[in-house]
Image (cartoon, rainbow, N blue to C red; front, side, top):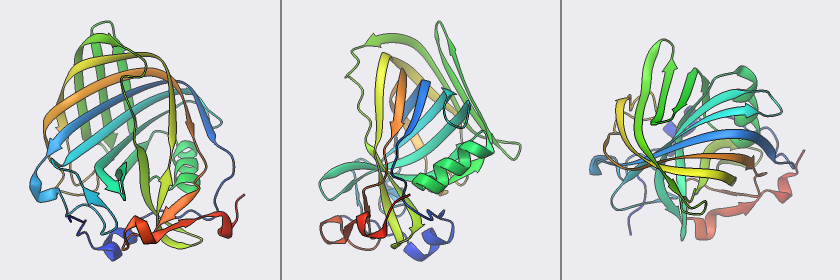
Length: 250
């Protein structure tokens, strides 16, 4: 059985803190969400995941870029990088890094849900013939996506797996299970390429998405649900999963 081999102590040193577990979802309206998935090198398969998680074969990295027009903290851009994995039998995405375009958005996504956010410039532009996305952090271009030839899809044709965000919580260092509900009004598939990707900036220099598998863009509303369960990062989900109820919510 394959399991992650990343050093939990090292991962924990750069993980955010969730002071208390929220009880209400975060509602985001008028969202454009670009998702790109790509195969990455086998050298990253186990090395980027903590021992609680099982890598997929082939190893896959998933990138999402959001343009959020309305939220409790106003409009903002958001981008995240996730490594495809399984927690027990459930398909998940382990978050390696995230970028938000405003301090308010970075704070709420980090403190309530454990997204490892830093501040940066996140741009998502939709055109009649495609979508362009770019992320800049500290003046460096860490992500560039060019996607062309949109084709309409059924609203249920794109599925989004839940996130696992490593964070310091009231229960200790844990993988927070974050469920994000997407309700789309329009979905399109695209042909995409990565014009820029800085693996180290997205959490690990071993991340190397060398072959784009799929890309899609959805117009939707998004609700990030309150965390209900966490998992010990060094123990498999079958025995290491805990309810957050005992820790209390705010």
